[in-house]
Length: 214
Image 1: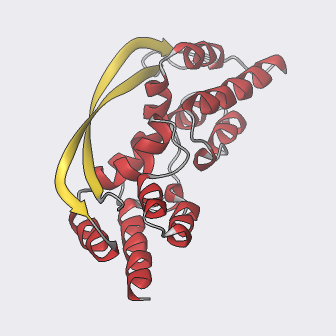
Image 2: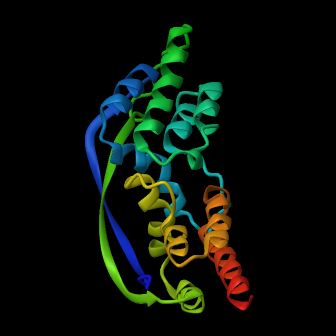
């Protein structure tokens, strides 16, 4: 008999790494050497902190390159990286490194930002806490999904996949374990970077309830 789905939540402790960049070359060196949790923070922070706003926010690297160095084309290259395609932070880091190396090798401007507008590398430690909710079937799953916090939803959709390097979100993995492969595939195909977390919650609930009624 398959085990029920145990819901968790998370809290982040943000760390200042003491490293900063004034120009694209220094940004490249920083991205090469910072811990993976730093890459995660600067590409996912906005998603969690601004979950009620319009989707598709810029990652921190793209924002700094565009707004503070005024390197619009380079910033757009960073922004065009489709984060949803990555389940490994080292692969994501490699993509950013390649973009910057290509830019600098083609005599791209290595312009310095104004004093006080340096890019400060931050990272976050994640603390995972169990919640008092376990779903044993689809109806219970949808009911609990309605009342869990945004932090819990974020953890099961983003954190496990990117930070832990698993190939799928927690919900789809559990659904496969109870024989709901089609529903698991449908949830996996959702692009969580292209909608707010509340819209994502509503969409998953609707999909689960439709399946439960079949």
